[in-house]
Image (cartoon, rainbow, N blue to C red; front, side, top):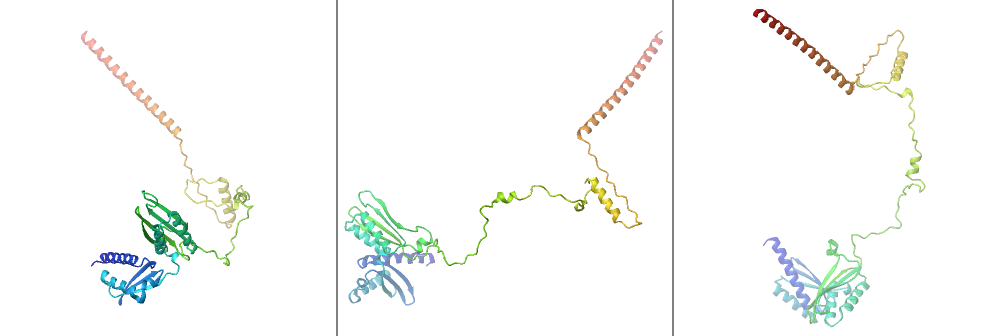
Length: 324
């Protein structure tokens, strides 16, 4: 059998055993069970409000339950251990059965709900919730809730901390489902914290209330400090960089003063500045060159036309002389 099917079968068997105990031991105040399989057999721990009723006179009742477990659920040598519930008002299963019995005896649901939840809180619970669902007052079903204290509804604390129990009240109009949730006293919730009074805390430096950001900024100087001439360094870079004439003269004078006697200094390299021609001046020069080219072309055309005219006149004169 696959592991998944084995888990499903074990869970189904556990639920059937729980229902069997609820039916057989309801009058004894059945409060739940725990099943554990051991090499010696199946160990079952029962929680009941009245352990004497579970065991019976001379162990008669407990032997009957053990025999039925072997026959009905095919358990190998079941060993039942009965434990008494210390505080029945903090056991959700017992409280749900009590409330269901009270509704069956004719208690009004509001009185039964408030009385039950008050007893739970008086027992020291951190929080409790009771939910009644069904035909509580008339032919139409509805849900009624009673809350006290702090309760968790989801997450890991709701599964591990909250004690939940269900019961069923069989009424003339139909069944009423009873669900009880209880957070026992002393439960450690994830959002709990404690404040230690005698803890050693390091002192934290705090800014005086009179001093703020604006006051601190007012004390800073707004003007840029003056820079002495001796601190000015000549940048070394591309020849396109333009240096201040006064700075260059000071550097040259310092080199002359520091140079040893009798040694000639090399003339500093003069960097010719590239003068950028404005776009407007360049366009004007281009237009002037274009006008001059057009004038020369016109003069050349005039000379060619004049030469052709003279040739035509000479040909006409020669033709007239030949006719004469």
